[in-house]
Length: 120
Length: 112
Image 1 (cartoon, rainbow over the protein chains, first blue to last red):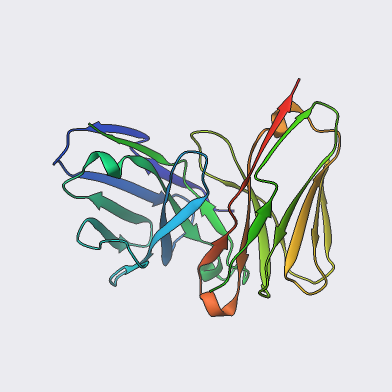
Image 2 (cartoon, chains in turn red, blue; image 1 turned 30 degrees about the vertical axis):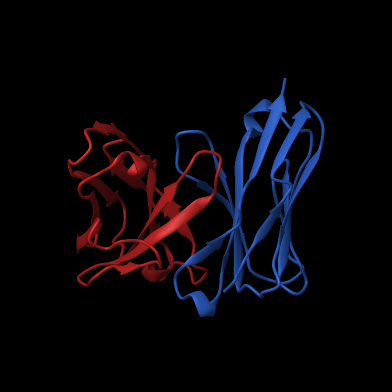
């Protein structure tokens, strides 16, 4: 499988500031990455699909101007939470799509360790 | 829209007992994955099943894909405290492109 890292693992910020979260695919080139958020004791909620070299595709209800995604290289996607507010506090997780590497056709995803965002 | 329903939502058992988690849908999936997630960490892929009726074993964990590829189950034999976590099933299909549809998750607590 793929090895995925996220940075930072934990961030606390003041309301109104912007926070950037990095997602790196360490051992293979990922054309497609995904960003999820997860509330306590709940499942994953897909926010957007990040495609290298093109604009991200956002899920219904996710504000693209608030959650800026950049996928400038095959190993790095970033999620910027702009003008963060307390309701943006959550666990943000990225994943890489394994299928596009040709190793699998079954849409497997490998996840990063997550970033805990707390907005005060 | 493809939906996956997991049951039960929460299971609390004693060490050594068996447990089964179910994942059901009215839609057909071309593949189905099971993940385990521990608190504060990302999900870890346990298995992928792709053929109707397929059974896969991973030590004390047995995964089954339904004949019609609409449902799956995860059975853990002689559960240990290390099995504690959130178990997620996720399905992939042509209609969803590269995206996965996740179930609501089953929180498993194995008490020593």
